[in-house]
Each structure stands twice: as C-alpha cells, then as structure tokens.
Length: 140
Image (cartoon, rainbow, N blue to C red; front, side):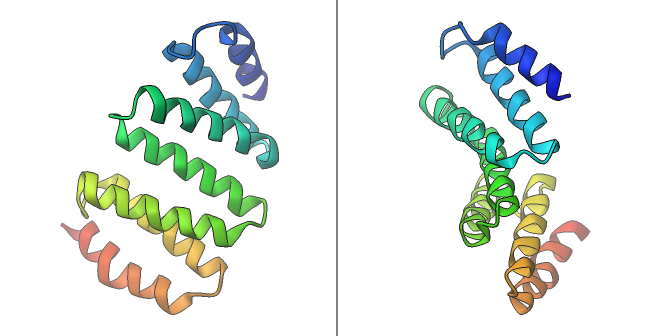
C-alpha cells in the first residue's frame, strides 16, 4: 500500500494543484503512511491535502470533514490528544449540520469523538454522547 502511495504521488506530482488526480494521490499517500504507523509523515500530507480541498473544492464539505478526521487520527497517534479532541468535536458538529444526526458518517464521527474523549479520561462525556446521541441516532 505504501509503495502504491509513493508511486501515485510521484506520478502526479508535476500536475497542477487543480488536478484531482494529484490531490487523490496525496490522499492515497497520506492514508498509506498512516496505515503503516507513520503518522508524523502522514500529518503534513493530510494538512496539505486539506488546504487544497478547502481552496479549490470547498463545496465538498463531507470530504473535507473526512480529511480532517484523518488529521485528528494522526494527532492522536502522535500523542497530541487535546488537539485531536478539539478537531473531533468540530468534525462531529460539521457532520451533524451537513448530514443530520442519523447519517452513518455522523454516527462514525461521533464514535471517533467518544474514543477521543475516553483517551483523555472524559468517560462521563463519552458515555453521555454514546447513550444520548449516537445510540438513538443509530436506531433510526
């Protein structure tokens, strides 16, 4: 997977920032780095991808939220859990506003938020989110 990510990046590197294949190659590389426990290297790749998406494809809100989720995961893996939690809250709120509380993406983002809360010891908040928001939404 990592070799594929690097190959895609090398192939599309010279293309315009507006080229979707280039941005997709960046995402592929970031995902490959992240899945190989190389979060320190994946983080700037995801941050650059996010900047491009926000600059040129700002109407693709759900994809932007997904990239932010990748950034939050990298932050958490790097021990920057407070920053990850702040971002996870923003992501969950964004999915609620964009897709509604019962959408699969919203429920997944809420689950990720509850995990982040738990990692920081906010167990009561995590349980409340799961019990009061996510479980009822998943039952709909």
